[in-house]
Structure formats: C-alpha cells, structure tokens
Amino acid sequence: MPSHLTNLDAILAAVEDRRGEVASLTTDLIRFPTVNPPGDAYRPCAEFIGRRLQRAGFTVEYLRAEGALGDSDSYPRTNVVGRIEGGQPGSTVHFNGHIDVVEPGNGWTLDPYAGTARDGRIYGRGACDMKGGIAASLVAVEAILADGRSFPGAIEISGTVDEESGGYAGVAWLAKKGYFSPPRVDHVIIPEPLHKDCVCLGHRGVWWAEVEVKGHIAHGSMPFLGVSAIRNMAAFLAKVETELYPRLAQRRTAMPVIPEGARQSTLNFNSLHGGLPEQPDEQGFPAALVADTCRLVLDRRYLMEETEDEVRGEIVELLDELRRDRPEFDYTMRELWSVPPTMTAEDAPVVRALDREIERVLGKAARHVASPGTYDQKHVMRIGELRDCVAYGPGQLELAHQPDEFIEIDDMVDSAKVMAATTLRLLYGEAA
Ligand SMILES: [Zn+2]
Image 1: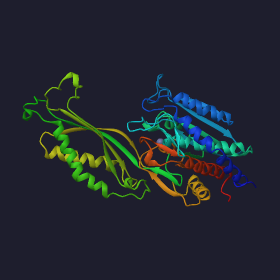
Image 2 (image 1 turned 90 degrees about the horizontal axis):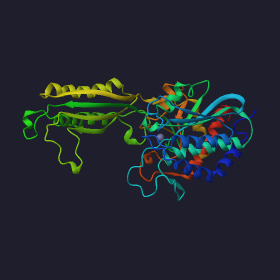
Image 3 (image 1 turned 90 degrees about the vertical axis):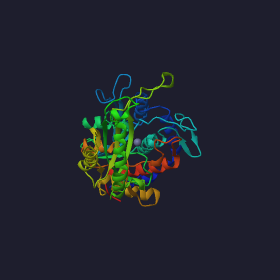
C-alpha cells in the first residue's frame, strides 16, 4: 500500500533543487504591477500563472467575474484556476493565492516592481503578501508532478483577484460558482504570509460603519448662530477615547491572534472629514462656514467572544447618550461592511496534516495562530461551505503592506517543502 512517504524524500529534494526557481518566479510575479485599487495588470498576471500551470500539465480556466463589484472592461477581474488529476480516485487539495497587491505608498528604497534579489531575500510590493506564497505553492506542486507517478485525487491552484478589497470578484465569485465546494474541492490552503511554522486557523471579525454627525450652517464669524458638526463629532471621539477604548483593551480573546497586540478588540478611525473640502492653495481660502456635517468611518475588529449586535450596540449607545445629553446633537449611521470571525477546527484534516509536516520538515512543533485581519478564507467557509480551509505560507505578517516589503528565499523553500508533504499526506490519507 503506497503512502505519502513512498517518494517523499525525493520530492523534498526536488523542492530544494528548485530554490532558484522559487526566487525567480517570485521576481516574475512582482513585475506585474497588480495594484488594487484599481486592479491593474490582472489579466497578464493570471495568464502568466496559467501558462506555467499548463506547462506542468494542468487544465487551466480563466474566469472573469463579469458583473461583480469592481469588474469593468478597463479593469477586468480575471481569475485563473488550474486542475490536474492524479489518475486515481481521491480527494482534491486546492492552493489559493490572491494576485492583487496594495499600492506601494512612500518610503521605498528599492523599486517596488523590480523584484530585486539581495541577501537571500526578494524585495518588492507583494513579495510577502503574497506572491512569494504563490511561488512556493506552485513550485511545491511542480516538484510533486515532476516525480511522474500517478497519485490519488487531484490538485488545484488558483490565482484570484481583489482580496485586498474584500475578494468579491475573486474567491467569493468563484465560491458562488462552486469552485470552493465539495465534491470539487476537499482541502484549501491559502499561502498568506503567516510564518512558515504557523497554521492560521482563521481571523477576527470586521464591522465597518460611517457615522455622520449633523450640524447647522452659519457664518464662521458668528459660530454661536450655528451648530458645529465638528465639535459634536469631537464630543463623540472624546467619549470613545475615555469610555470605549478602555473597555476594548480589557476584552481578551481565546483566539490565538498574532501579533499579540491584536489579541483583543480593536477600533480604528479610517477617515474623518468635517465641513467643506479644503481648497488647493491657488484657489484661496474655503468659505467661512460653521460645518454642518462631519463624517467618520469606523473599523472595528471583533472577537469570537463578541457578536456583531454587541459591537454595533455599544457604538449606538454612545451616540444615543450624546443625543440625550448634548443639546442639538444629531447623527445618522450607515453600516458599510461586516464579516463574522472565522475559525477552522484544530482537528480538521488540513490542520492535522500541516501540523505533522511542519514538524517533519522544520523539526519543531507547529503553532496555531489567527489573523488580525480578514482574508479570503471567509468566502471558502461561508459561501463554499467548506470547513477544511486554513492559511499557511511563508513570510512575516508584519511586513505586509509595508515599504521595502520582502520575503526570505529560505522561508519560501521551507514552506514549499511543507506544502508538498502536506499535499501528499492529504491525498494519500493518514498513514504514517
Ligand atoms: Zn494577503
């Protein structure tokens, strides 16, 4: 009875032999400036991955999410999915990586789209989040296929879009079409950068809302004749600062969230604007007016131990107290987005397989973690209704979205070995 151990050593050696390949593939992927928004260069990047999969023997489909949020003829949302059958009946292991990256921002000392190799690292936007992870999974699977034997089941690899903006034209769209559901797929691994010795079981919840505080317009020289929406918003912010933040800091979770600072409830103000837009210099001063509106976007990350109703309720309570206690305070609230916390069971097959192979390849026990922010796992689990899904990939979470983002070549090779061994264990079953 063949087990996944039959040819494991040869396959791990084949991954090691492909060290240069992992690095150059990462560089090649970084050179596609797949910045989201707006969603540049998706099609060529998807086709590059598709051609590589075809060369390895995969059947490849390009799937444009027509009609999905963000899709247009100028910025088509093109996803790529490849599948290869092993020649024997069995389950399917799927590696899913997002091809989009966030904009570089300021502070780079290297070209963000050059994919520069230096000191055992590859630098560039998306090196760690998550083109290095895509490269590692591709090379892991290529090493399995190079072995040439038939195997049970099938392997799939997808490159999907828009993870950085919610994944609606990417994994969510494909999941609605059955691409992330049994019987097509049984196990999903998302190579997000969460450290090569960690299995990421899920993520905290998200609740976004826009609060608009209303005022009453008047001449800026006689503010007593109006109601300043900015001062009223300041009263709300003061209440959040003195009453809500201390409460949130107390709320610890049993979820193994990394980094440590995110193991509690958090709240960020994404944006704040009151009154008229500021004028560009050449257009003089803005008009002298009391601000009659002030808008704030809240980004609340919440825990398994909290509910969305509670999260919403404590914001509404603060606002309602102000409406009661402060003359002429009025507000509206619009909910923008929410995702509940997501966690895969620690005894799920994909988790157990990764635990065993991390220990075998790296010689140390795997750590179970959870991500501070949400990622595409939510769509696999909620739309695809597939519970056997985790994130596992090379790279340091803290480098994601930073200037001079990089990935260590050693980390990619190590995690590619873990991915190859885990794929075989899942396909061949539990033996050994
Ligand atoms: Zn990512």
